[in-house]
Image (cartoon, rainbow, N blue to C red; front, side, top):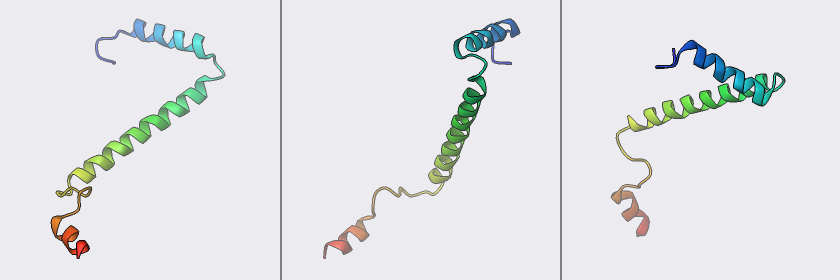
Length: 70
């Protein structure tokens, strides 16, 4: 399931999380974790799409900088 972790280890981790945060905070914790994962996936997808464009958009080309000078 999670690499080399067995089911008993995962259950122990979930019990420790339950003891630390309590049952009232677990839904909020799950929502914030889900939002963080969605944001990370969105950022990675946008970065992948930007890399496929070919040219670097951060640096202006030499021709456009010369035309702005005079």
